[in-house]
Amino acid sequence: QLQLQESGPGLVKPSETLSLTCTVSGGSVSGYSFYWGWIRQSPATGLEWIGSIPYSGTTYYSPSLKRRVTISLDTSKNHFSLQLTSVTAADTAIYYCARGPKVAPGAFDHWGQGLLVTV
Amino acid sequence: QSALTQPPSASGSPGQSVSISCTGTSSDVGGYDLVSWYQQHPGKAPKLIIYDVNKRPSGVPDRFSGSKSANTASLTVSGLQVEDEADYFCCSFAGNNNLFGGGTKLTVL
Image 1 (tube, chains in turn orange, yellow):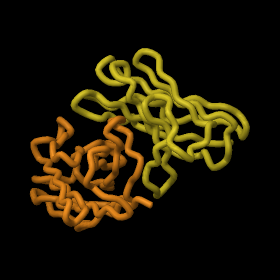
Image 2 (cartoon, chains in turn purple, orange):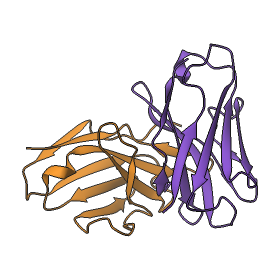
Image 3 (spheres, one colour):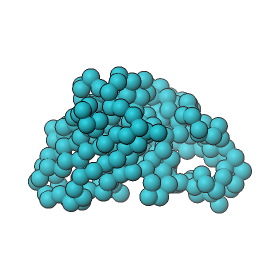
């Protein structure tokens, strides 16, 4: 059974870089059928798609965040990562990693449990 | 691009049907048949219940159905059950983005 697990610091200082990792078990990040994505949720902004990366390595980012976001894939460790630079209090949120089928953009069928990050 | 518009709340009694709307624009909901719906219980991650407007992932009861007309998508929950009480979010592909709705809290009276 596919499982995703977010990890990283729960507290980040303003202006610093938020770095999170999503470890995938019960499946592989290699393969051309899926996107691996990051979504965040806060009371202020609700659910917000941050970006996605398929096995090919091409990245897709939210236009509102693209200047600050980097998503990468490490097939040797079967995980993918998020970096968000120059964080402010507005970046405080629960960060989820998720998998989505490439044939259905926006449809994330497996999610991690979420990680609260406070700035 | 703004978030999609959903009513903040909806309610129904057990056994009844309730529909939740999700309004966007021709650049998102109206432009693609790529609307998905998520159910979220308190403290849990969202769960995909509808994708591609009206398709259900394996294991999702057929009480949940989706549709779309022009720039508005809808989720209908038929035969309401107590466990359906949750927050529901829509999401639409928008070319270079994936937009979420603000969420609708469904109360089963």
